[in-house]
Amino acid sequence: GNDTVICDNDQIILDAGQTQGYTYQWDNTSTSNTRFVYTDGVYHVIKTDFATGCFGLDTINITTKPAPVVDLGTQASICEGDSILMDLGAANYSNQILWNDNDTNSTRYLSNEGIYSVVVTAQNGCIATDNFELIFKDDPKIDGLNKVLMLDGSYNMNVRNPIYVHLAIWDYGDGSPV
Image 1 (tube, rainbow, N blue to C red):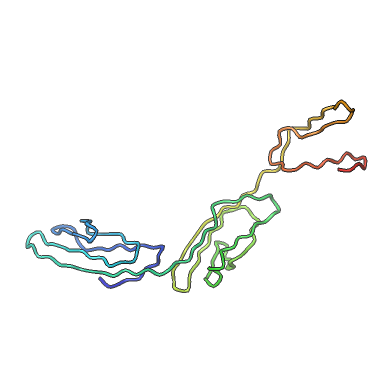
Image 2: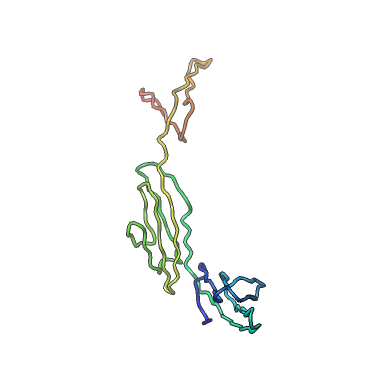
């Protein structure tokens, strides 16, 4: 076949033709009429006719070119009203960017729940895609307060069964330091 260039995140199917009446022997000892190729290399197949014993050899040179690398992670959670910075990285700043909401920036702040997807096209024509889900954290919750009278007459207070609580600031309304 004709020498071919593919992106390094892609594959090509080498097809040596019809299956009935022929046997196939690829350079990797595969005997199928087709073969998936993912990497640079010179690949060849020998095709033999059952009836006549005649055979033919075909060789193809596969070259790869670099595809952009995009890794958004899988998911992040933020509090409602907050935002998160998504940065596709300096290596993608000169590439063509297209988010599923038609934004074309390589860096952007996200503040709405949802699934975001991006297509990055390098100047060499190679494409990479990725998806990312942004979800809101649940609101902080407590089951109540524990108030314990200490021996010195003061109270020790803490929250009971806190969920998504990282810090509690007490204000007793009496002007005392928090």
